[in-house]
Picture 1 (cartoon, one colour):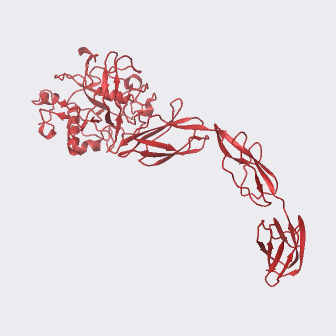
Picture 2 (cartoon, one colour):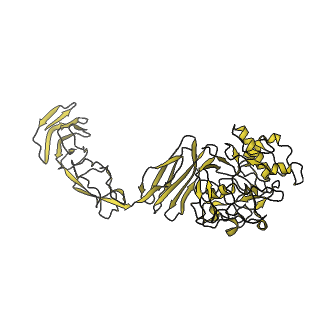
Length: 505
């Protein structure tokens, strides 16, 4: 081993290195560079035992003498072993570390059902090891594990995907979700639920956004829906063959009634005042602050006739085939004056409006479609659309402050559709069935009763902001009476509508 002194004082010695040794030079001047050409572990310049400059090991380590000295003391520290105890996890190889050097953090071990937290210096895992620490003795490190909770994805996420940055995590850990919509779609709703279907976290996020949540001490499932850029979700059709009953009970899906529902698109929200006013005017009272006014509030004080006009005008504006025909015409500008009473000359013509179910434009939902979507394609058994907790999904008498609220503020149902319970009633295409005239029967077609004689009424569903909890708002609530029906030309501050579109074969 060679020790060199460079500067005003030039000298060198070649020595045989022992565990501890002293090398003496004559009066080393201040500022002299001391270079040791060998692998050493500790270097002191000065009187033996008086440390002033300490170097880690290296092939060409050096220090600068700060005071005039005439001897150096060198120690050869032995290498040490760092042992990793993974406690039933994947075995981690031990490391041999030169004296004064640092251990290299190994890849994290794995253990089924557990999440690795870190390496600790004590078996009780109370003091975490710092890998920037110099190793000066044999060291044993212990793996700390905590319970791993699973992050799962719902079995059916349509028109996009959600990717979690981890499939399991410890309670309190941060989990990041990345959303990847299909072309033409964007994220609509997100909910995270435990095994008992309790919502851990529910947020509305914009398209393409990453979202993080804190992992609870339970396994969770991530549910997400994607909508078209204009706010529609696809509802997959299905068949109800009448051999079973739904829970809660339905007056639409009844025993013996065989119904086939085609696929369709439903808007995630009730038609807003901004959307309505883009194409139509209010026949009577405009929305007011008293009952909720603003671009994103649902349109109300509109009639069933108003809804038909809106649907066809919007369809024509967007170059879609209009669904409704009145007196042989599809352009609302050619339908004549709006009938304001049952005695109006053109009332019967408007009342006899026909719907082309194959047209690509906007229309009111059939009552069957409305309830099918409200029940998440008849998969849910919730009392309300999306939950058994009314306050979670609906604006009703107990929480609305006696007014409508902006759409999409409550949690959606499983399809990502908002406000199917509460806020404002929603008009459907179907004729109402007052109890005196008989209820829905097994032969009533999927499009509803076609008898539109004067005096009958149209159906409205979903309840409004003025309805009480419990039975008034339940998802199957449809009483065949004037209470849940609505006149063709009448308007109310609790009634609005949402639109759907047929899907061509």
